[in-house]
Image (cartoon, rainbow, N blue to C red; front, side, top):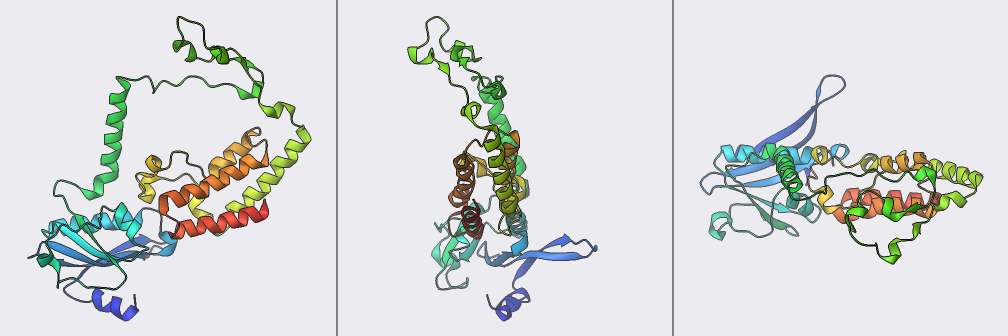
Length: 312
């Protein structure tokens, strides 16, 4: 948006603005983002004119926090619906904040009141009086824990059996694995389970070649972690900090650079370069799947993958 237009809306007395501040290293507050909206109390809705977060502070949950504060403020004014005109890049964000393309507010309630732009999508979010939007992460966590505890009453899925010590690299009897004997308690296991598991292929690898491969992969990983586009992928996704509360429901096989580093440190996980490449590519594919290919974080993932394939 042009600066004069933004300035006019911010200082318009019919609009309200929320600013997101962060204390800097020098003790002064820094403006990280803001939301400007216009309430229409008689119609019972509010129009979000714009919401923005500083580029360097995005994907950290600040946008979700700002929207939650905006919703609580709107509720205090007696508003029950929020409307906004979102461009193509903003539609995924507003969807995650509870906005829908389906407009249920009667046309005569909002037409002629809100600003109309070309090339945008009108979206609506209903506000519920009994929902504290500032407490949604804690509420979802409590609901999940309640569900997990109930599942424990009818399932043994929470029982963790000791894993196989791969460092021994020896063949084992499949039926010696704890838990499998419960499947066939009174009869012989199928013939295909009677064979022994083959030892990990690293047992047949040249130690010097493996050491060279590990050093090469470590060098590539160090360059990846220091790349300008790597910051969203350094650590596992934190749903609370990023606001991506459904991340681990959408992404079933998460991976990040820290996890890759941990696997590399083990010494026997990446016995071939292809396994390493598959993990990095899966990390980028997860980003595309959750954010969409046109999200700026996905663009960073694309840059990182291109750099990686050049270095590997």
